[in-house]
Amino acid sequence: MKLRHLFLLGIGTLAAGCSAAPAPTPQPTTTTAERPHGPLISLGRTDAAMGLRALPIHLANCGNAPLTVTGYPALRVLDEDRKPIDVTVAEGADSVAQVPSLQHSPTTFTLAPGQQARAAVVWRNTVTDATVEATSGTYFDIAPAKDQPWQTRKADGPIDLGNTGKVGVSPWTPDAEPATCQQPAQDGA
Image (tube, rainbow, N blue to C red):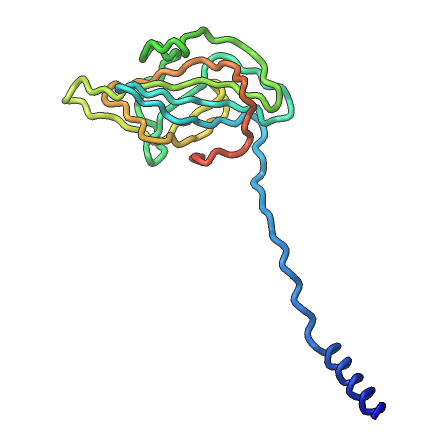
């Protein structure tokens, strides 16, 4: 009897040893987007009231070195196919509307890594001449300054210029909020 138990026990051990090993538990894979380096531009939400539109522009220093900022953002309006629209871009928001918070002279300042600056683009959705077709854009090409690389960003709504054919942009100012260094969701690239 003892021999029979040992025999059965041996077969059970062999059977257990021959069974397939459990499949390894899959480990979750994480893919993180590469963090942007250098200056990164993003857009806020458009404030639209009584035909006047104001859209915040943020410039984050996502690099490892200080970034000198001066003057105005370089800006152009693009259509839905990302082609430039014939629009006058005026330095100074007051060329479009008197907005006290945007009326200041351009300055030069330095952003440490992780800091940001802000500006705003303003326009009016005004139709003054029924014989002139209204203009509407979808994207902005924005650079920290002239002769710097463009970054294409989609506005959160239409850039509905009516037939004014003009936008105004305020100068950069330091922003107390910390920089957000991840590619914007509205990235047009």
